Image (tube, rainbow, N blue to C red; front, side):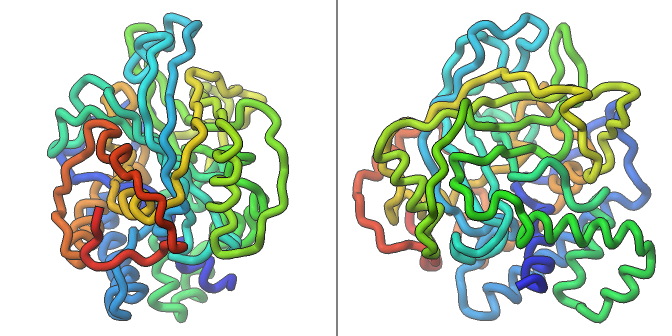
Length: 392
């Protein structure tokens, strides 16, 4: 299992989707390495080859290159703190007390493996009704904004180029010795970090409702009274009852549905500000911003109401959605090499996936939850592998 965890978790780099566009000017906290674009395109080729090997050449639907198994999407309400201090009122958080509809996608990194497989779990948030021009060149007028997380505070490599070496182990296991010998101490840390995200994840066996999710890498938080890198996190509003999972390949789905049959779930959305002199960096994905040096500040509350999400139609709709960090307002722009590489890689990998699945590569971004709410059939057949092309 460890071999699969190491190889497939290499797909964690592209935990999101985005269209390539003109490069944004670097902020004062950023410094692009030489050959950044070429390295990102090389990694994109590696990821496409992995998708081909895992799915296409086996006659399967091409799933996402990262977090391919959608555990489920749930409808939610994202409300800005009504007492938010003036200095934090910018972008999505410009209006205290403002409430947005949202969809939350819970996912697994490995895949499409069952829920009982030890693995990292992701949380992607798509907020609806967000005004303002977005960063994606082909969707500037979209009214949605995405925030992406995983249940670990740091990325398992310093940058995209180093992580590409881990990804390459999948297609060329013989490269492991050369890879490790190039920098034994660092490589050991990186490989351990990948395994800690998957087979060694401390959240394995816990409900999705109990976990804390992190952005891992930095984003901008810019307004009239603030201009700083941040990391963000979504965490339970309070103690959550621990329950034993059922051990099936749908154990996380089943637990989440059971909880939402009983009532709502609540999470706080919080931001952590960059601090000079605290050892914080923007370009190093493995750099953890310690909470004792810069605590997370709650800026919004997420309420997931009682609902039925576990249906074939809703799982299929969830699979067809795109969530990616560059689908965002400029005030919350992604920062650092890993995020800049994501922007380039998506243009390659996502187009390949949609074309292989006989889908329109430029599927329209939803404007609201009307399509989602129209999916009223409760039929569920333990859906996992949708057909090619996918219905919605």
